[in-house]
Length: 431
Image (tube, rainbow, N blue to C red):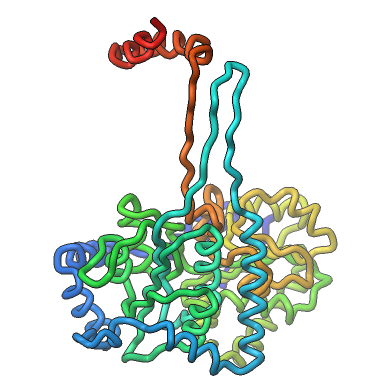
């Protein structure tokens, strides 16, 4: 874990190393994924059988049940849930749905001053593929966060691919699938699943958009297939930036830092504070809490290898610029006036305002999507939304007066660009 002070002479150098640290796939992953995708494209189901046995030790046989999970299995998993878990899933689904319904775009249809009719219509994609991890990160919340926006957008066909290592099925994921009304679930994971959804195989029909979290191989597969299909984003390891003053309970902040560290050994947790003594208390609290976690091995490695504590002299004056440079996936503002600091932060996946707003609430029940840009991509990307499952088609309509008003300029520009057929197609109508 790195300790930095903004007043140190070498601060800029050490901070730049944190900003530029790439904790994502290497060239070997890229090469392996390219080979897997090529094989899936070439041999289809045969490739899925081979890779699923090799990586997940699950046999995809002639029996359909080895390939697919049925809607009845999902309903049974939901019905069997304890009441507390069922209520929590329903609350999360309701809040996620309500938030994303507010994102639906409006069609436009109007006439401008030249009497040209202009506008745009929004349409959902026909089919969306949702990747749901099945190893360390088998989370029903991720299924809700991906499926509900697609449903709100109006996507008719939702396809879920999820690995079932040694045949094991995650009942909470199935319950979430039932809640979202998904009935096409394939027991296939990894880069091969992404390839199957993009290219299609004998059994799995292709989709138009693929979303959802996954390991380095899944993320790399999505990156390589962008253009064959749409994707939500290329996501790397989780990250959190906590900006906190010394008035916080160090145990609270330690828990927030570890909430992302426990995701993966390459996750990153960073604290920025203006109180050096408080920073030491947080570090001690991280050690104590980490030792108590069932995920302590993962969290400890993440904190030791990638964690950082940065002490600044003036939190409001210095922290926003550092936050914008980091462009973190999650940013917590545990300060007296979070809105004043939020006004200065322009690069973040999602921001959590105030001492009583832990990032974990956003992971589950707040409503905004928890699929967020990582690896400084918040500089140019946003979290998953309804718009990731939709596309816009513009339209134009001219009558005689409108063509007379703007047609000559179009023909003139075509002449300038050396495209005479373009110009002719306008001028023949002007005559």
